[in-house]
Every structure is written in structure tokens, then in C-alpha cells.
Image (cartoon, rainbow, N blue to C red; front, side, top):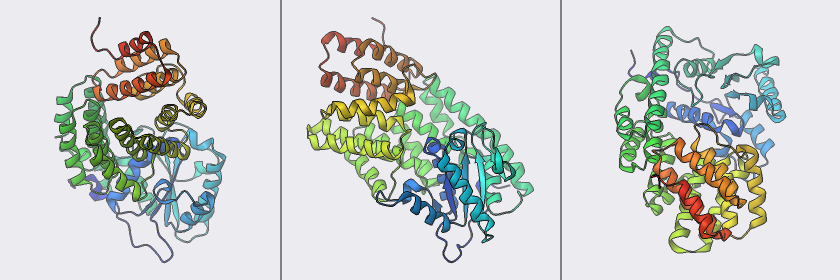
Length: 422
């Protein structure tokens, strides 16, 4: 039996004349995290993958560029979710996929359902794979079924057996990582990273989840060790490189982080995660030097990401806050209003960053008691994520200064991040 379950996955064949991509990924930006996990696995297997945020330039007419890319693709995966079904543009893209397949030029597409929304209409008659229980990303039986479906092949018996085992291992691994993070137990995360079963050895997802937890806990050397392992095993995966940049940034290795992320950006990686961490490094340089040009560069990168992916609240709130720091109060208010439509103004259960974002939105409106209550709720949700708390607190201090807050108002916000009772 294969030591790595992806050894049983079908490998990409040679591309026919006129084809540039093995797989075209059709999705909405709200599902970006899941799609990036799929992108990483396909890349590791050697597939040439069209993902718009890595290929299209800002000057390219979107509809024309996507149409040309689809014509140059041998197959496609359509990411189906409630968000997808609601988009008229995506319905048109579905029709394009169907038309392309019916032209009988060897093109084939598969639907990946990533939530429990109903697949209706013509799509219900097509081959679709259920990933509704794999919200973090594809793996196991579902991923192998998707790959064999793209190649119009049945799933071999050996793959069925091994993939079922991996499904169970993946679920257990993700639950174990979550439990360790909730318990603020960095040692448990480090121990999990030593797991050597097929789920951990055959995909970057679980090791990246461990590294992300360690970074949040400010355990940078431990996180770096995990990232060394995952990058050695999956050199083409994007997520480990992003996390390494974040780890460097949070350990004051600002220029190293900026060079790493800048290289990804120059290579065409324009997703919100890459742009967001790169923007953070420019903000760090502003804080170190006081050079306003660095603040404006940070603002522009956050704004670029938010305009390209308007459901990404992380880059949206940072674009708003950096605009306020740059003295652009009206722009900051407009951006903040858009972000508030995404996250609301209440604590989001078990989601530190959305709750901290809701807090920052209140602070931008100078609603100090409301902001303090939300910041405190976020901190309590993730008591071990010290680096995350420090990042949120540092941003809050800058905003308090820009808002001209009183000593009493500053103390109210500071108290929300206090780890000891008075």
C-alpha cells in the first residue's frame, strides 16, 4: 500500500496542442481558502492549474481573459456552494463549462460541492463530489474521486480503501489541531506535527494548520521547524510560503519577510493572503521609520486585495484603518461600511479574527465601549493566541492616536487585552 495516498492519484498527461492548463478552477472569492487548498494539491501532483488570482493581470479584461483560459484548459472543477449558486455570473460560467464539454473536444469538468446547498437544475445531473464535510480543503476519497473523474476513470479498489482511511485520519487530525489550539497547548501542536500517517504525510494541510496555530501562539521557532518539514515535502505548495512570511514578520524579520512575499507577488501571487502579509511588512517598516510612503504602500496593497476580493474582511478592515491613519477619513468610513456588511457588529462564535475585526470597526467609529467589549470577547475566544492579540492591540493603539482618544478611552481599550484581572 502506498505510503502517501497521493501516490494513487492519477498524474497529469501531456497537454494537447493549443492547451495551456490541465485544470481550470471556477469559484467565487468567498470560497477562496478551500480553492487554495485544492490548488496546492494539484500543483504538488504536477497539474498546470488556472486560478485567476495567480494568472490574470490587472489590465486584462476579465470576461475575455477567463474565456480564453477556459478554451486553453483540458478540464475544469466548478466549486459549488450556496454562494456560487447565488451568482448570475457563475451561472453563466456553468453554462460555458457545459457548452465546452458538449463540443466533444476531450474537455471534461467535475462539480465539487463544498457545503450542504442543493445542486439543482442541469448541474444535478452531472458528476459531482461531496466535500461538505471537508470545509478546510479537499482530501481522501473526495479528492481522489475528483481527480479520477477529471480523467474519466473509475476509482480503483486500492484507492477506495486507502482514501477511506485517510478521510478518518484527516478528520481526527483537524480536530486534534483545533483542540490543541483551543487549549493553548503549543507542546501538543508540536507533537501532532510528528504524526507520520498517510493524511499527515500526503498533504500540506494538517502541517500548515499546526504551523498557523504555533504562529498565533508566538512560537516562531517551533512553527519554522514545522514549515521546514512541509516545504521540503511539498515545495510547490503556496500556503507554507505564506505562513513562513507571516512567521518572519511576527518575529521582526521584516525585510526577510518582505523579500519572500515580494517574490511571490512578483511571480503573480495576488491573493489576499499574500498581499495582506506583504502589506503588513510595509506597515512594520512605517512603524520603524516613520516614512509615510511606507504607510501609503501598505494601504494600497490592502486596498488592491480588497477590491479584487470584496468579501475578504481582513484586507478590507486593514485598508480602512490604513486610510484613516493616512488622514483619509471619508475613504476609511466607506471601506469600513463595506466590511461591516460582511462581519456585522456582534461577536462571531469561535472566530477570533472576525470578532476582532468587528471590534476594530467600532473603534473606527469612535465607539469605545462597544469596541472594548468586542476586543475582550475576541481575546477570550483564543486565550493562547498571544501574537494575534499583540497584532490587534498594536493596530488599536495607532487608531486611538489617530482618533485623538482621551486617556480614559485608551485605558478602556487597553484593558480589553489585559491577561490578568485588576
